[in-house]
Length: 115
Length: 113
Image 1 (cartoon, rainbow over the protein chains, first blue to last red):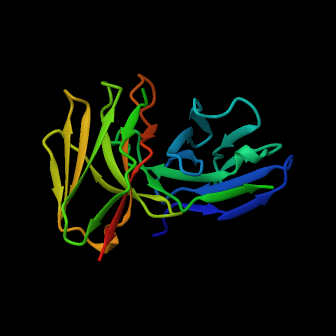
Image 2 (cartoon, helix red, strand yellow):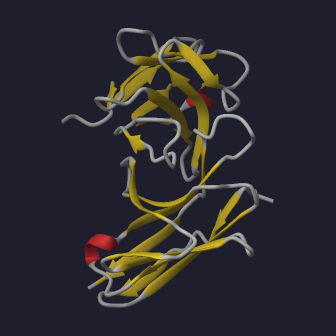
């Protein structure tokens, strides 16, 4: 009974490259959330997706960031033309249904380092 | 004013001590409240939900005061393994999706032998 799976665990990119972060929700969960945690900061909501739909992207930066959750396969958080300020831990969470108390279960995160 | 505010600590306590963390939130329409625990360089893990009537899980007791928009966590008989950062978490109730959680920056606890 695997939990939320994120890969890679660590990702190093040079400025200007693209970063792709993947997240497979827990079995039976259809809601995926992405959060970013800067060093010494709290987690910040980025985007909430269901299969093939973006429900809320109010926390996404306006440029360079995009997310998807296709019908088949994991959710992808994509960062184009990365900059040093993108260095952070990116956590994915999943929940079974929106009507619940929003209990979300987190993956181990992807630590992005931009050189 | 931050949406969720916590004392960052650190709280340094001896084993066996009782320690209490407090948290305030700004959105009076918030509906769901949680305490998560985050170990260094690890993911947040749900510790417990928080209900208006108060709830207890072993050595952990959580309280919610809606009138004051205040949440607390009490840890009794603290263990070395309780050392972590404790995150106060509130749902974002903005009339739309309720899937967004607002995290406090966390209160760091260090339990010493």
